[in-house]
Image 1: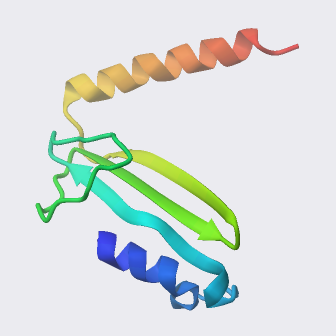
Image 2 (image 1 turned 180 degrees about the vertical axis):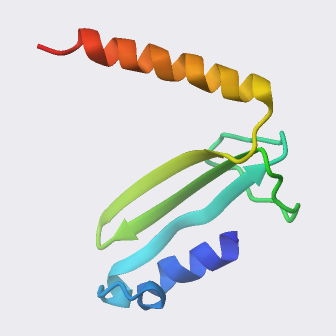
Image 3 (image 1 turned 45 degrees about the vertical axis):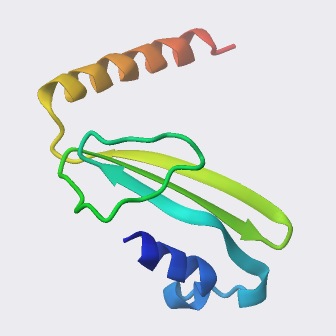
Length: 103
């Protein structure tokens, strides 16, 4: 999966993105991890282990001309109940914070 993402970053026409190929590049090889083995450092690397249906983390960096950006996401795919419960708590905390931040 990481190799497929890298190929798209190197050739945006693969997803019909009308951007000159020379203006787009990868900042680092995409990092995809799951199965309870997570290394959140920017120097982490994907493994060849198959993805587990639980918690999947994805991090990639892309460059457009001279602008470089990083994005990281966590996907919960049939996660353990403890993880789902913690997510719900964190979501409630976020919503409460946003409520009190309203002018």
